[in-house]
Length: 161
Image (cartoon, rainbow, N blue to C red):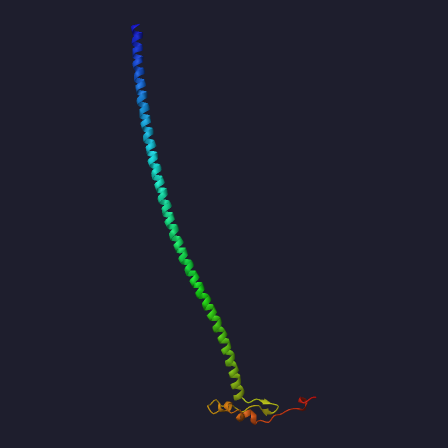
């Protein structure tokens, strides 16, 4: 019996040691759990800070890109306005060139007509026109024109009644 009571004492002390070990193990596990939770909280805080910093960087980049976009659009509008003004001015200049070309052609035809006598029905229509200051006096005095000194030829079929 002594051995059985000794055994029970021994097993009771083992039980106390086991329960103490389990308690120490439980405290150790709780401590590890608390450290892990604290580490996770700190990691989550750092992650939120990184996320916020990334968001702030993206917002700054968005602001910069919007500013650049506004400047580009302003430049495009300015250039478009200048282009339209140049187009309008170009159209006016083209019309002026066309008008001046037509005037030049008319004056060239007049000079050719006055400088080159043509024969019509055997009669000269004009004398050669000299391009000097004296020749322009005929425009001032219309009765001194060379064509007025030419006979007028009319056929009979002009006077049909």
